[in-house]
Image 1 (tube, helix red, strand yellow):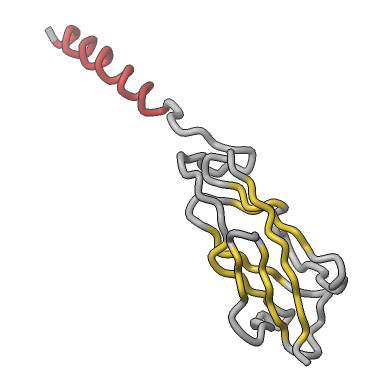
Image 2: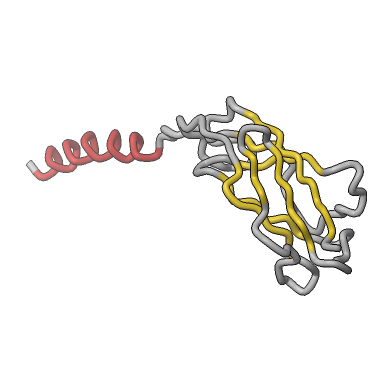
Length: 134
């Protein structure tokens, strides 16, 4: 009788454990969860200097329709050593990835970052325009 109980328990537990290990959620190449969200925008932006403090003089202007970010930085800011910080809508990601300091010194050729939606189907390029405080 005890053997029958063991066999029944094994036949019940093995499929449950197997089903629990199954991947139900798709993952992208960065290991991030792909969701159903199609929203794709930047909600906040900042530039951090080498001293790990913000170098902006006022709140940046983010136009989500024209996909433009205008930010003014303090006079004397080292534009070659800035760390951009983006706040994105839930589940979105940024391309290219920010892996360290970025050179923003060429003001005539602004940087472009693409925001990719949670479902990875919508991509919107945002151009970052920097001006230096007079």
